[in-house]
Amino acid sequence: MNVCVIGTGYVGLVSGVCFSELGHQVYCVDHDSLKIDQLNEGISPIYEPGLQELMNKNRQAKRLIFTGDLQKAMADADAILIAVGTPANRDGSANLTFIKEVAIEIGQHIRPGMTIITKSTVPVGTNKKIKKWITLSCGHQQFSVASCPEFLREGSAIKDTLHMERAVFGVEDDLAESVLRALHEPIQTNIIVTTIETAETAKYAANAFLATKISFINEVANVCEGVGADVQSLAEIIGLDPRIGPSFLQAGVGYGGSCFPKDTQAFIRVAEDAGYDLQIVPAVEKVNAQQRQRLVQKLKTVYPGHYLREKRIAILGLAFKPNTDDMRASPAFEVVDFLQNEGATVIAYDPIASAQARRLMPELELALNWQEAVDQADALFVLTDWEEFKAIDLGELKRKMKKPVVIDGRNIFNPNHMKQMGFYYDSVGREI
Ligand code: UGA
Image 1 (cartoon, rainbow, N blue to C red):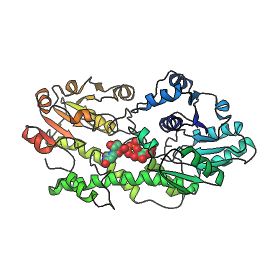
Image 2: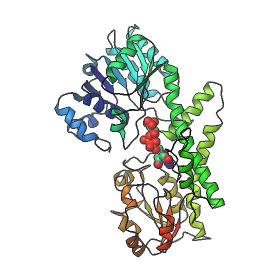
Image 3: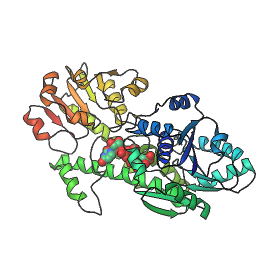
Image 4: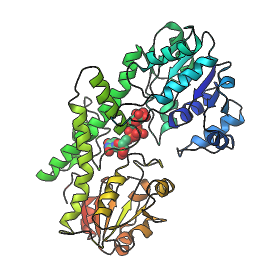
């Protein structure tokens, strides 16, 4: 089928590439002409394992075309996917400016029988607004709208899309359902057909629940520290109960990224608008914020008083998680700020996110490799669980550091091994 994807951010680009890989003819549209030029030169604007290769394979097969011309891209489209950003407003609610602009533009080129599918994460009721905005723009209602929320994770976006666990079709009529079925036809997955409102809410509920799991295990980890229990072993024990499940029970410095912080906030506003005050989700956010503070406070035990003045502190990991260069809402921002405010000299290393850090944290000193970062350091914080860090030669690490102090915000090292090697080692929810 013919597909037009509007927006070449994370969701739009990955969707466009994957749907072309499945055999559909896909046009990806963006207002940003520099980005379109870059994509037409075969360069992906985002770091995502496997994306650039798959993108170029489908460009060469002429199944994937990047353009700034929406009219041309929509001309023969059966499905038009909206995948533009919904950044947070000051009050945490989702900003729908880009969605509205796109809806009005779609209305200028729409033809009867087309289906408009929203991939962006939007508050409940947005698809109805999209219908209204398009109708006002084109003057008729001979089209369908649908909500098809995205559940991909950064770092494994291609696999998550081509082998999705479920596809959710929030539809208003049979046309939208049949278009969505045809679009997903080659993918073997669980399909859930539901109302638009349920699909919209499900996306927020899924992210809020995952964030809840993380904050819950982080609270349990904090208790473990007080009673001498081990949170990793505990997570294995509770995770073997299928009602709980083993994933998203890794305690640490807390969640970041472009989704959980923004979507939990937006969900709180959605609930408020619906007349309900959420109790759990605000607590989840509070625990998440507190978790960064607890980690940096751990250094106080080692360096009390004005403990960080003239100390050299190394940070390993700036991305909000491994396999991405994305630093949005990364715990690194708070940790670096705190350390610098306490007078420490901070030097950081990240395998991929350094270029982003140069832009976002121009004051931060960056090292070219982990060895340079830890050289003569008085302490080291691990903030991202990159495989590269797990494989660090601990003997070399100890020799390079001025003081062998490691605060591990991702629990990547073995506490007993670290102790045997003569490190002062602290992590999250495990015995020192
Ligand atoms: C998240 C969801 O997992 C996706 O299903 C969803 O589609 C996406 O948001 C979105 O809304 O677009 P993502 O933000 O890419 O995906 O990253 P996750 O893998 O979910 O990790 C989020 C954060 O939680 C990271 O900072 C990670 O380090 C942290 N985390 C994750 C933990 O601290 N502990 C865990 O056990 C798991």
